[in-house]
Length: 302
Ligand SMILES: O=C(O)CCC(=O)C(=O)O
Image (cartoon, rainbow, N blue to C red):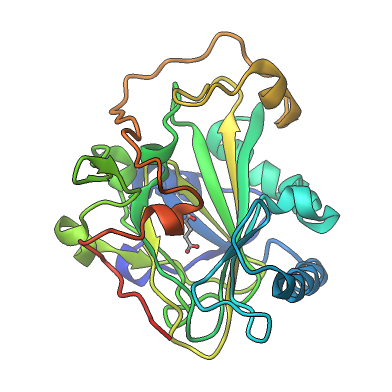
């Protein structure tokens, strides 16, 4: 046993995970690493992100690039998410392919991998939306679960500005029901596990890594500091999506290392498909979770 989880302390970046780190990830389903990106790399990401926040003043509705928080105006921009940042700017693209990050991810899911998706979740000071408890696997099950999402905080990430929280060991448990009133709402009832949650506090430039079946969520930002978290999901090259018609060409274009496999590895895992959907609800996880009644986190209405 490697650490007492409730006071979880991220490890320091050392180029590679050692056996204890790998054991911790296998058992607990997450790990935090400080000091992966340099201050210069974080400075560039931060500057580019500020530019996008500026640009969001010109839009009044969420779309393919910007997801807007309620109350967003040109005078007071409240950008909640920059969608697919890897398509929006080279600086984000470079981080997706950063060799230091890929080396760490490869130790968890194997060297041959593609990326699935990217997003930059922004919680502005004193208003950032919470993300309700969910398992990414509830949104996108694959033929096997060698899949990890990394989070890169561009600001020091602590409890008060809404850091990512996880339920240690939940990646080995059931896939919970993410439906309400018969429809997929992208969140689960947290009453059974909330007390076991652990915040992952990190300095800007550190990274969190969590398993695709991990229960996770994050509280609103109640501090005067922003919390900007860049998230990328990496998938083993022999894991094929069960619900999207991804297609060879698409995944081929998302390969990062090794070869895409045409003989998917099938693992015996608990799967719930994210259906039926309420087709009037489209957009990001924030929209999908809007009607959730059993909330772990209170919305702020500022
Ligand atoms: O931004 C966060 O704190 C959580 C992000 C997340 O889990 C998601 O967007 O699916």
